[in-house]
Length: 285
Image (cartoon, rainbow, N blue to C red; front, side):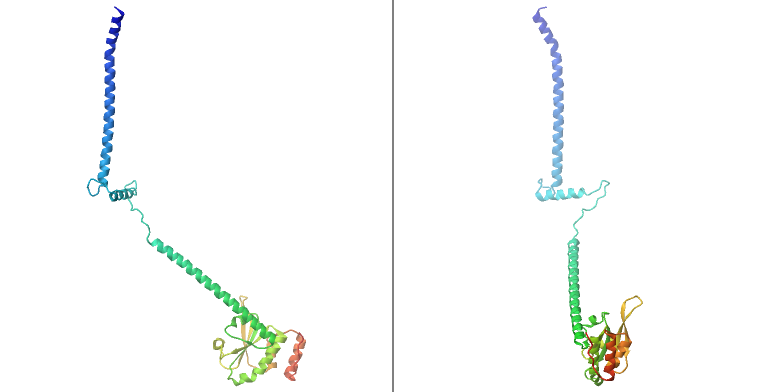
């Protein structure tokens, strides 16, 4: 056999193999094309289905309103639990702003009330200090302290024993004892400590006189400092029913230990001379 004949025989032998390989490749290509076509049909089908779901009015077109409505429905569906139970989407609480406003108003009102209370306390403190200053001036001047609703708290603060005289301008006995009362105030405020001589005008301060159950004029009451069983400061009222004379009233205050002499010897001598001979002795300062 010639070389050329050998090559032709070998080529003839390889031709069936080539045809089989080409056939197999054609089959794979066809399968790939079929799969790709199927996937495209599925995608197109889903798109048509989605479009048909979003197309609420069935006109074959999806408007902006229809798209938004479909999105809202999808969001509601996402609220459903895995077990199939669904709950409505939580809506904003319309009462929440009102509650917030109410809370803010309550806080503002509370702040205003606190500010008013602090202002009232500051005013009361200022009035108390002013009353204390007036009481001090009366003591230094040796005159009776005039009690009123404005200075009652400063007088009744547990600092002094108080010898009170309740009177009116039209009471004859009140007018008659006025000089002895002024002299008593001078003696007590100048020469003694721990006691105040206090006048109450029942025409001007009717409520104070009612608070002390005053029935007639003049009425003299000693408010002596005492202690309650709990240890708190209090006043023990002692009604004075003796002579309305300067010496007798001073002796009563000394007897009840309401007024203590700054100088006991000289105070005693002065009291005796004043009550027996009506002689005034100036106490050393």
